[in-house]
Length: 339
Image (cartoon, rainbow, N blue to C red; front, side, top):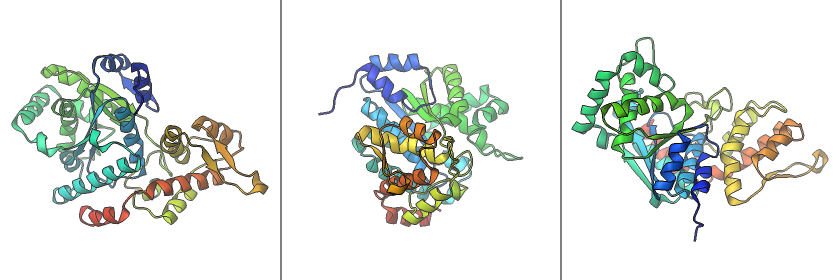
């Protein structure tokens, strides 16, 4: 039987590896008040989910361990507003649901505590549309553009849909009936837009929990449009090793995508499973290294006691083991229709 966590333990579990919580005092009060609060995480059905998805889903697993009920919003309409063709929208939804389910299984999450919600099933209802018009009547184009600027791809002649995007994200909190919204720090402006605007139409502001963004293997951010910056769920071992081997990783400098994957995915799993991170090296290069906790790896890397090539080999091995739990054949079949 799982150990019952105290309020403080639940708070620290939720807080680990997060960038910001708005507001921490509200989260602490919620944990004292409710035994099983509700959190939601949403993703628009656009580019293929990559290894980076393990990061937010690991955090949702933390929420689950802290007693939360989880709602995963697969935002099909948001995907269309952000450029996904309406003709493949249903297929993209199917791909995302399968990919995220498989990641949860690979993480050992309790699927009984996770509810998938399709955006269009509630976002087209009259009362939701009425509230869209309410928020549209009190916000300017400038307000909406500023809120969505880190998330929506605005071109020289932006489509109207991009301005509706933050309004819908704000309303999703209300219509999913949640206590907390969780997402990346790139969504912060939309989260603050929601906290500011929901009370204006009679709804409560929600707590916002944000993850830092994981750097890409090449470049500052993992991007679905830049293949070398990310590892796909369907990549084979050779592809994984090649991408990791070519990743930016300068001796002694831990600010890179390889170390980020280690910190936010691999070492979280190691910590929870009480396992060590093992770096295998020939005896002539110092032999095998074993680490407990990310900080010890970073310390050794900064002191140049751990070479980037040895780090890359160990990280690639861990990722291959993780992706070995993914049914790549099924995802590839769904991907033919979705992409």
